[in-house]
Length: 139
Ligand SMILES: [Fe+2]
Image 1 (cartoon, rainbow, N blue to C red):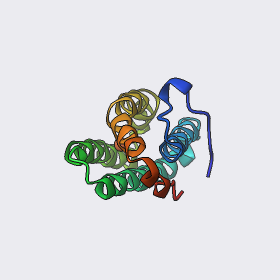
Image 2 (tube, rainbow, N blue to C red):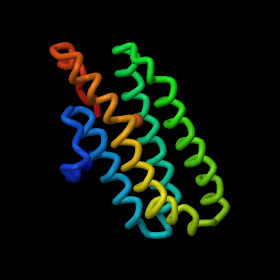
Image 3 (cartoon, rainbow, N blue to C red):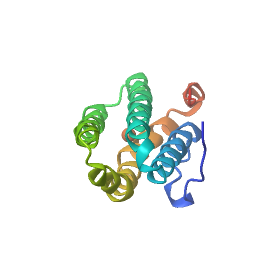
Image 4 (tube, rainbow, N blue to C red):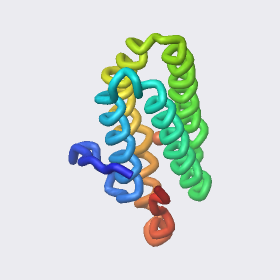
């Protein structure tokens, strides 16, 4: 698994969450520099990784019984729906839309998401105090 540095302004204070975010950023960076011949396969790998990362966060929210889980899960589902839609366009040969999503749209979505939804999750984990010891990144 690749790791990359998360800008300090985006650190959540919860190492397990920051690890997920670093992995996401690294995967996004790798995908944006992938050659056209590998792009479709790498994109699919990226979407799978995003699915796993979102599921991990949702598991944490379930453990904490957070009311915000519904809207947070909905945001994950929406972006995954969009990513799957774009995947079918890529498979039809439209690499340009895939690259646009990877270079511009996803980084913007990611920064917004982690500074709102994921920041709220981090606060809840920190608020759980000692119990937060059970929240570790399984990746
Ligand atoms: Fe999230």
